Length: 172
Image (tube, rainbow, N blue to C red; front, side):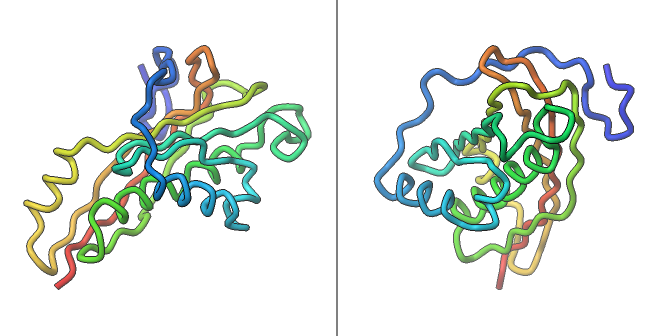
């Protein structure tokens, strides 16, 4: 049920973390380290913890520490959103390749419960999602796609959910 202006569920079911994520490759492991060194991302306090070899799975961790805590003693909402912001766009750009333009178009975040522990977000893109984009878009055509991701603690309790809208265009 949602009583939220964003339409995001304010009473979500627990979403436990995947205990066996897809394996990383050497290339995605290097990308993970580079991503975590980017000053703009590093400043959020978030860290990319895992990137599956095919870029279809990414796990992000937002630790609860002095860098991410606000004046009320809970995780700062800016750290939560900042850690989520570039991930779906980066995943789609890596999977679709140079023949596509992918941009963030809009986002809505719903803070469900204050975060007082390390939080995690798992991003997943199914092969049929990217296959649909490749098949449906002729050169010069574009579409908007919506994706949703939640920040959860180790028990799977949802603390925030973000809905992202991405613009995708086939170049040509």
